[in-house]
Length: 203
Image 1 (cartoon, helix red, strand yellow):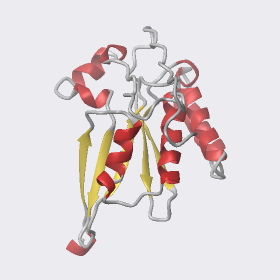
Image 2 (cartoon, helix red, strand yellow):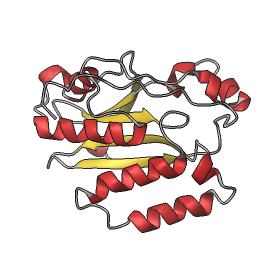
Image 3 (cartoon, one colour):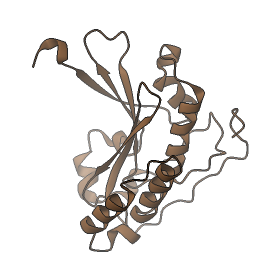
Image 4 (cartoon, helix red, strand yellow):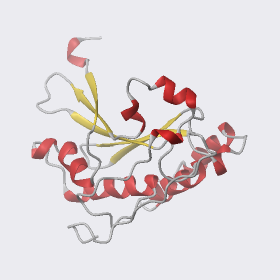
């Protein structure tokens, strides 16, 4: 590969999970001019796949679950970096000739948020409302094929991360990452805290 075509990708685990922190990092503190409508689309996606209320206050931290909801093998695998199981992750693509990197957001959905089936339905609903549901049936069918043991309906962990990159045309490039069962479904999942005030955008 020619050096001019190369790209360096760096991953960072965020210490905060509020919508305000997502806005700040995705725009690199204002260095990248991201229209407010695009950021609101990203926030709506986060809420859809995480089971959060759209009215969650801008500066309230997202109530991630603890590592106790992951099975022993998963906790052992991430013993040296447990934060990656319950923290937002950002990747930065640094390429020759670019003044700022492309920033991609990753939210963990292994054990956080709704069950595999509800998570998939919420993601499909988000896509269809934006005219992007062309492959929704194939996506759900693929998940059902990979989860024939009933894990799609009742369990978690079929999907590990949902990521979003705000492309130059403003559209969100959304990716669903698949993985093995990593959540101990014998434990109940804490109820989500709901915000009592709308965010500053009035949505």
